[in-house]
Image 1: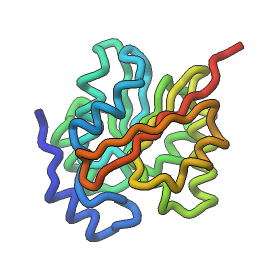
Image 2: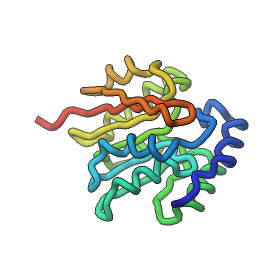
Image 3: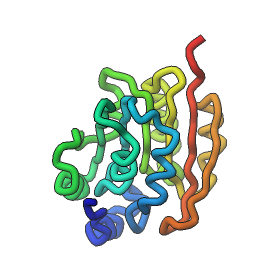
Image 4: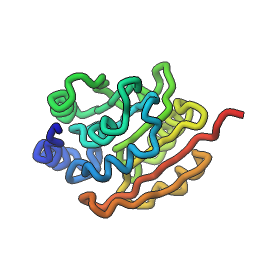
Length: 182
């Protein structure tokens, strides 16, 4: 399995803690928890791919018929990601820009630090995510606090929270669902 490159990740955290949001890459056990509610044959958009630690969990879940697109804004993290996953489609741009493009997804998975994001930017991002999810689609986000819970509950049909104590730091996994089509 590819290395999540913790040194590269930590250096990027030191350079830009607000943008990176975590000291170390997501653990494989946490990435597996994040991937578990996702349809293994669906279309998946990964936001904030970093060095690919969540991607690793996704690839263990997804099948050959699924479609995965990853997004990372930081060029140095994107370079590390491409070293780990040369065959995964990677968009090196802001998540909002990718979400404004055409297409919809069965699942959107996020490593973006919502709790420290500026309120208007967070509201815009969540609205775009909700719009791009197919009926019955799922949005899964890793966070390190419960600060975003109310806002997620306002935006999605149902929100459940899982806890991953083996991550550094321990993490909350939000699983948010869009209603199924009538």
